[in-house]
Amino acid sequence: MNSDLEIAQSVTPKPIAEIAEVIGLKQSELELYGTHVAKIKLDVLKRTQRRRMGHYIDVTAITPTPLGEGKTVTTVGLALGLNRIGKKAVCTLRQPSLGPVFGIKGGAAGGGFSQVIPMEEFNLHLTGDFHAVSAANNLLAAFIDNHIQKGNKLNIDPFTVSWKRVVDVNDRSLRKIVTGLGNRRADGIPRETGFDITAASEVMAILALATDLHDLRERLGHIVVGMNMDGKPVTAEDLQCAGAMAVLLKDAVKPNLMQTLEGTACIVHAGPFANIAHGNSSILADMIALKLADYVVTESGFGADMGFEKFCDIKCRMSGLKPDAVVLVVTVRALKAHSALFKVVAGRPLDKGLTQENIPALRKGSANMLKHIENIGYFGLPVVVAVNRFPTDTEAEIELVRTIALEAGAAAAEVSDVYAKGGAGGEALAEAVVKAASKKNTFDFFYPVNFSIKEKIEFIAHKLYGAGEVYYEPLAERQIKVLTENELHKLPICMAKTHLSLSHDPNLKGRPHGFRMPVREVRASIGAGFLSVLCGEIRTLPGLPSVPGGTKVDIDKDGRVVGLF
Image (cartoon, rainbow, N blue to C red; front, side, top):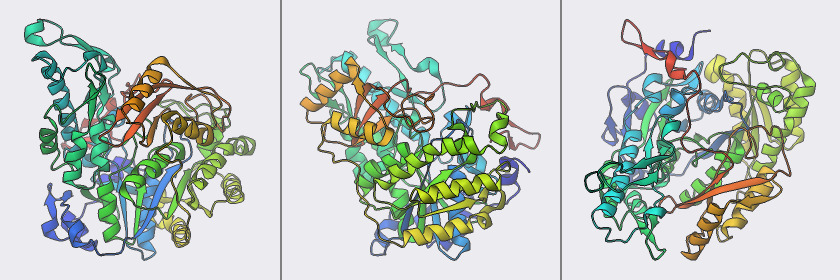
């Protein structure tokens, strides 16, 4: 079988104006970026405001291996399958970060015959939204240091400045730095700080959670950058920077229209990383899609303990949108890995036990799937299990997964063969999703926001993750105290932890329970409207592996991109 990039390049994309017309977008509502990509003007929401919304489907997964389990493949393939059975469907995806593109995971356009194209544009700069986020974020960082050096009228305590600069590549050397070295008068005041990856910026979260340009502008003003000497918050509005940030983002706030290999619509907007951010595409992308389509299939990052929980407790809480069903992506490979009998290491050959039939390991590892089904049930939503088929899966293994899922209360369990067959391999899954979404559900949030910060953290840790004790490092204790004293505690929680385990420890596979969970930091993302809680060794700027994926990326003799995966 050809590589993902070769398959993507073998198809000539349709003019994006044709894709727009099929889903009911007018030419005047598009801003073309070449022939195959366009931005969607927000005016479309006014024109379609009286239309009934389509069904809202979220795709999540079990706890993945470092290789990923085909969640984007399934999201795209499900939308393809829905279109093939006569439903008007659109998928909404996050834009990939250059970090994983040139790091371990590679791109995020799907794969095989279930992809978004042009794949190169999707995985690289697209329309420049990430660069706009980086520029806005770093402008605020520059304003902070400049204000402190030029007299500090706001009386900012430099030791409390929490706002970091960002970069959209994996670069561990920038995690902790000192700025302002040199001539104090000419080069600024020395201060310890660091970098995050762009997708972890609060500006990215605001872009994803804003409901229009004016909401974006207001949220930017609420960003808290640190405290003054009296212990009160200092904001981007106080620094008179929020307006300029909004100007840098005025085009980035518009979602991007692309297409799949089969010529159906896909709306791409905002950034990834559900392990360190909220890990969902934008509210605006979903709102537009829901007015244009019968079914909108969106994707939440990593497992149901990560992006799906944040989809419900952060994104849906802010948008007011209510999901109709959830698809849980499962692979036989990942379930075997959750038996803790095998290791999956990116860049190394798979253990033979993962590619040969092994019923005992599969049965043991299925505890992870059972916990995710249980967790989705807490939100009152029906779950359809999608077994993303690999060539090495046996019929006995697939049937065992289906049986276990159905016995655990899944509404359905279907094989997804979209990687090899495109939409044709997703028709059975599409039929199951339509049936599940047609029934009333009892969707609700997992916790009330008026709980204390510790109550919210511990409710998630105990009930969703299976933790025993939760303990707080001194910095986290101080931050919780300051946030509570300033009445900034009544917000949803955005947990940052490893995506490779239900716990904070990537080595704890399957369904761990009773572990001791450390909380290292609690950061205020007031503009975004949540509190970020950093657990264990999670880092908000990843590093590159020993052999970065970018080593394979190049330009061939004809000027085409090669090596993206």
